[in-house]
Image 1 (cartoon, rainbow, N blue to C red):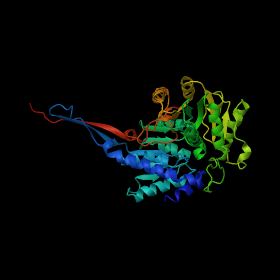
Image 2: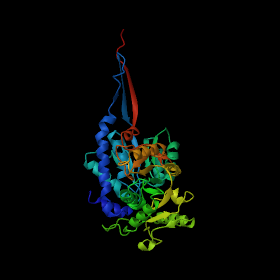
Image 3: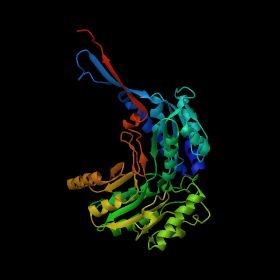
Image 4: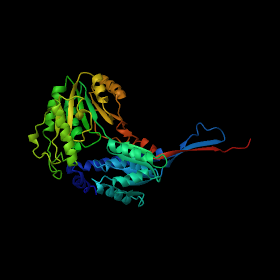
Length: 413
């Protein structure tokens, strides 16, 4: 199955076949970690150290019941495993709704779980229309809904859940406009290539892709030069060709929206650094969108404020940590943020990073890396990036309910 999945993904959503195996490896990494901590996170919490004589108290973690997981198309294995696996380990059953863009992925995931020993129908795949999905979200038999998708979709799910009977839990992993800040002591030999990859992997179609970059003025010119040079080497084309490292975006509507964001920025004064003739396949009316780097941008432009979800990035010059922090927080989103500085050689830079991390309004802060989910860390967002937590020990908390047991054993004097 591992050999089949990369081509499967390519045919369904356009990611280069050379990059599909990474999703399988990531799924395995997350699954193994969540399995490794399951016993410690689901066992009873004993209070023997503080129990009074004749009493016993403990807290159980009990399953919720039926969990409805609505999965996205951009990472259709990596994202649902965050909720599906801990849900079933905790004793829940799962209804899994894949995106209609990637319907086969859910079937393959459930098939793999059954082959691993999961009883049939503990996880059931549901291919549903929007209206039928709303029906399931409202259903009193569903105790928890986990949704990954757009802010608009998240609002609909939240409202629909509230309309149903009872008070079910809802986790919403929504959009991002993730920033990077390159401090004055950053190692450009390392940093530039990492940020190019963070911006353009999967054609930028990741909720935690790098979409805006702030560079200290002392490094700005050299950073921009190198960034544009690497971008121009990308191979945009047929995603089934193993040499391709940039594929089409998911739909014509997405391509139109991304091109409009670029055009609007240019009309407002931004400058494009990547000649379009380098990517002749990227024609209007197709889903192929050339990677683009924009400078002379500012926060009056949608390209620096609204989610792009495509292979474009804007780069701004800044003069201080304070200015960078203010700009990074100037967003309706707060999923991840990354800071690039030479903490290895400069202890003061690590201290500066930690200070910036405290001030950032975001779910995850990276030092010298980006666009990666560590399964031991809580995956969560701030502001319009959603609510709820997956992965880490906290991923089990939202998929179980605490049940307190208070025993008075000794009743005689």
